[in-house]
Image (tube, rainbow, N blue to C red; front, top):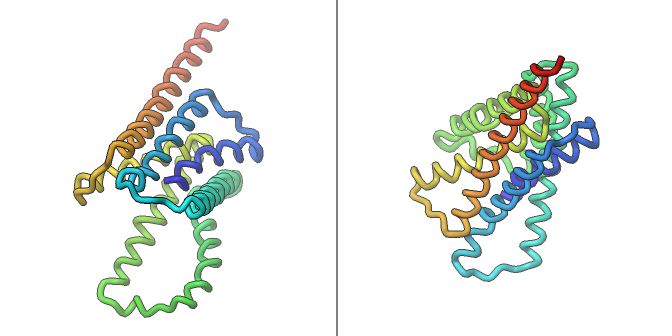
Length: 211
């Protein structure tokens, strides 16, 4: 949750530094609300069961997760930059191939014995196609039409959907902190969508009324 919650903030900062994209007040307010919600969801389990947390490990884990969020934000900005030269499908292919070049050599250290297990190949294909290739393509298609920071913010529908499916299908339970975090993420996304829609409508009216 720290990873995915920090990516919109990093995405907005990087898009401003690299692409000169100015962020709206609605994005800033909504991103802060959503980030607080993600933190609440991230720490809900440990806070709810009263377990003691090693502060050094917590800090290290949080820093690693934020570093991953920064890397994901950088990937998004690279995809946006590639759109000036290639299609969304091509940009997604380039990014995934670049990741494969780095990861495939590391896979040899772990071995490929898992492929001999029944159904493992189908699991790998479903993860590669349904969980990676298709989301990357849809993300790239959306980013072609909206700013980078907005795409990352809308991407936070993922933890909302995952938590809801976990409750409905896996009978998982959210404690009070988790419910508050979940609500903040949902409120932030709805606020951003409504605020942006109202701002666009007002701008259209001003343009229509101007001589």
